Amino acid sequence: MEQMEIFKEFTIEAAHWLPHVPEGHKCRRLHGHSFHIEVHVSGPLDPLLGWVVDFADIKAAYRPVEERIDHRCLNEVAGLENPTSENLARWLWRELRPALPALSRIVVKETCTSGCIYAGDAEES
Image (tube, rainbow, N blue to C red; front, side):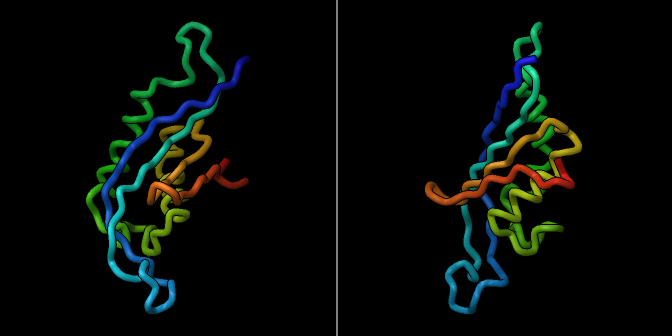
């Protein structure tokens, strides 16, 4: 059966600081980003419907997660006390995976030129 990967993009506005970087590092101060998030799902192409999964299903799975992180201080979200892009991507994976078992990767971009790609680990895949 044909395998495909699809994705849906989201944007959140959020503040954070990185508590473990050295004193004087600019990211130790409270600051904000327009985080761009991609949620990727892989699977067989349904021969009748012609898709892997309905994009609306990805949006529905993401909506309750978005409520917890959009226009928030990420450091105050349980599990995101050190909200690097890497930790945010891993957190998103763990939050979304139960609703999206075919989740294949999370992409988090905190700026136009900096981001992270997370595809789970052996225990989570």
